[in-house]
Length: 131
Image (cartoon, rainbow, N blue to C red; front, side):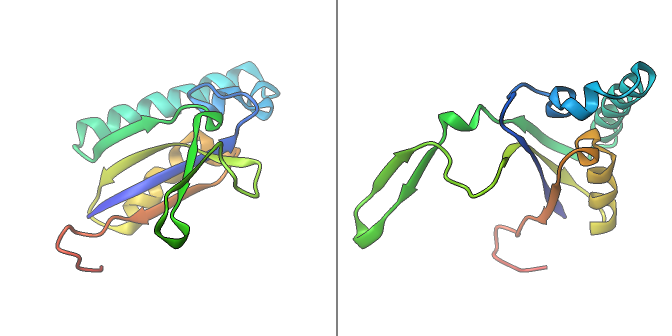
């Protein structure tokens, strides 16, 4: 089963990996920062070698976002993200795991989870079958 792991972050400093840009990260002792970077690198290597990693994509700055709506069937495009939140979608990973527990285990191991929310969503099969 494929799962979408959505990583959110504050858009004040938009560089990837996002967890390394957080003030909370920089406030940690050097050894702890190094441990989190190793944790991230080790996790990426593990899920790549296991074949669970399908894709991992950082997103561009939210200010480059366009929002599209079609009121009355007429496309209306506006610039920028218009969410009522400081947190923006920063990037995502697609993993192919045996269980939802494994997908949430992987998500919890991203250092970003220490500083901001990470969402795990099942991806529907193209046949439209729900889980």
